Image (cartoon, rainbow, N blue to C red):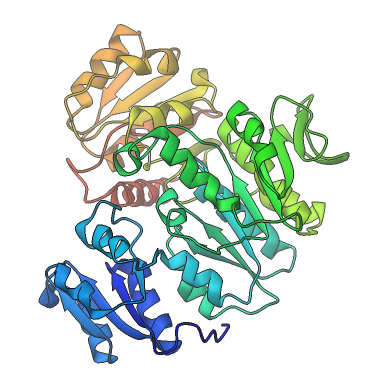
Length: 452
């Protein structure tokens, strides 16, 4: 960790805890800052605040008193999820107090070069894929950021010969000032988080901030399948490294006749990728760009891309039983996510497991995506709706009580060469605590199935 001195003896307010706020508070204390933490959760229900207080850090919990900002703070480190119209943030900005997020702090202390990945979809898969490829080549690549490992915590324990592979949300990127990755990736940009950003223009501007401090010595990997990103390429000082599934982007990664190339070098056959779907092909192309910019061998790239099982609960390949493949996509809590998952499979050999919390919506928009399915197993509150849709489309359909019994029933119905996909198209809260809980039960059910 760089022992920067510009925060020493300065009063810093950490607004909001969670993992990133707790990490930021400890890093700031180690840098000699005078730290105050303010979190809305009551103290007796707040283990993080209790731990920080025991470590000598001032904590104020249960409310966000505006009067606190009269204590002449010089910096506010804001939890990314707290919007900019929050009264505390509004008041801080009015007082001229800089408001940053924890990833800016991570950059200031990091001895390690940073690879930053953002985008609407695919950033977690791409981030994980990049880290695994670099590690397979003998490099030391550490996951950090929005992927669940606080960036400042990872940066504090990393060295100059290691690399931070950092997933970045639009919320985090709103709070940067000097943050500069050596390599940045924008996987894609669609409509999202408009309630936070106020407009699509603001959302896209937040994503584009990932490159604002980059120079001609840095690399920006962009999805040239999207015209809007292709157009913005000329607005960055960084060297542009494109990827595309439809055009031969000779300065980056591309697909020709089912073969993937980086510049003029053949890397891998599309059919050999372990994860199905056009979206995962784009993720792989982005990862290849980063790997080649990081001087990774083609052998290391191939070894991961042919075995990568995906991020847990996100189109995660579990394996085979009796040559029947199983995929866990419990993270698909809405129709769009299930549509994306279905795009990577042959419906004639696919059994779809779906259902969950009934939010009052119909499922008619799924009709073209599920047409021709070999069968469906439905469960949860929305089972009757999904069953009716399947029957309308002449898809064999069966109801089951839980995701575990659905897995067993699908296995009973499937034959060699079929695929069983859990992609619920619904939230999990009717039967399960979280989508992770639902997915874990599906994984457990798969593990208990016996070869036949």
